[in-house]
Length: 185
Image (cartoon, rainbow, N blue to C red):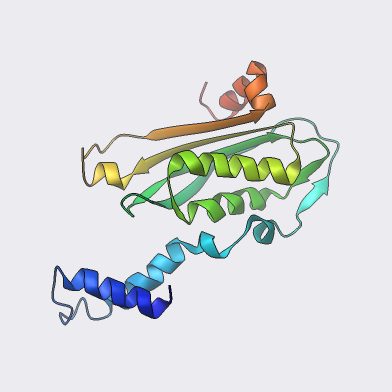
C-alpha cells in the first residue's frame, strides 16, 4: 500500500472519531502513515541484507550470548505495541556472526505485524540457518499494550517465550548455562 493510501486510511479512521480539520489533527494522517511505515520496516528488509556477509570463520565452540536486545513490535491482532528484550545465544560450529547483526536480525522480524511466539522462532531459525550453529537459544520477555491498555488491563504482566534448537534443546547443561548467563536460572 502506498503512503498516500495509508494516509487516506488513517484519515478515514481518525475522521470516524474526531474532526480532521481540528488544528492538532490536520497532519495526523500523514504522520501516522509515516510512523506505521517505520514501525513495519521489517517487511522491506531481509536477513541477508542486514547481515551483509558479516559471517567469519572461527575455531570457537563456546557459547556466545547477546542479552537485553531491546525490541519494539506491533501485535498482529490489535496493531498495538509490545516492547521488551530479547536474549540470543548460539554455539558456533566454524563461523560466527558480527555482533551487531544479531540485533539487526531481531529488528527485521520485530518490525512486522507479529506475535511474540512466532517472533522467537523466526529469530532462532535465522541465526541457525546463517551460522550453522550447534545450537541456538532465544528468549523474549515483553509487555503487550493489548493486555495493558484494553481487555484485562493488567499493567504488570510480562510474557516470556523461548525457542531452543540443537544443543540448547538436547543438552540440559547448555540450556542451563544460557539461562544462568542471562540471569534466568
